[in-house]
Length: 119
Image (cartoon, rainbow, N blue to C red; front, side, top):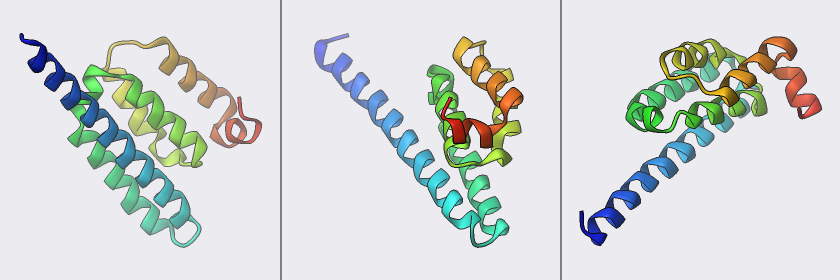
């Protein structure tokens, strides 16, 4: 590979990463805000989050820490509806100590308490 090809490859990968994180963060925040209005709208946005994760599955396989950020957003935006979906996704990826530890904290303390005390 030439220098320009390597550079283009990394720029493409970086754009996918930024695109994924922006889309996910936006949808989690919107679901959080709409949760105060109707549960139905939140569920629609949760399906949108799942669809976005599916669209970026190739990126997630390359960087499983993207799932960690999704779990973090579940805690930060108090969205416990997506925990089981993410747990199934984690079980299909190779083991990651940080993700496993975060899931353990969620199981032990729950996302409401983690959000409140900031652990």
